[in-house]
Figure 1 (cartoon, rainbow, N blue to C red):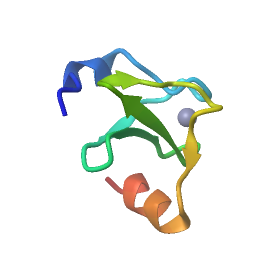
Figure 2 (figure 1 turned 90 degrees about the vertical axis):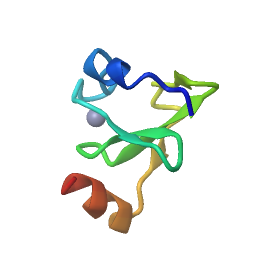
Figure 3 (figure 1 turned 90 degrees about the horizontal axis):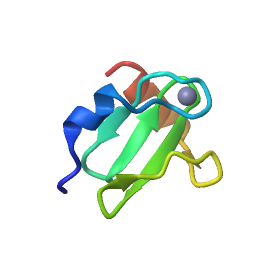
Figure 4 (figure 1 turned 120 degrees about the horizontal axis):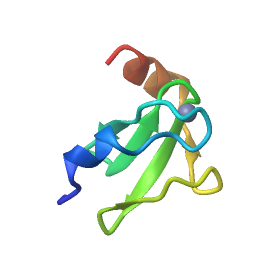
Length: 66
Ligand SMILES: [Zn+2]
């Protein structure tokens, strides 16, 4: 995955404008506040609420504490 980690400093959640966390294993960006995961497609983060997936309660807990 060639996603540029520096992007994390400039991109934000489209809903709460909060910081996103990178889930390297699943190539997605996590908003622990909204409990959503935004996909990264071909190294481009797709920051659309319509594309976001809800985190499971377990995932949300994991990401909230990381
Ligand atoms: Zn958010």
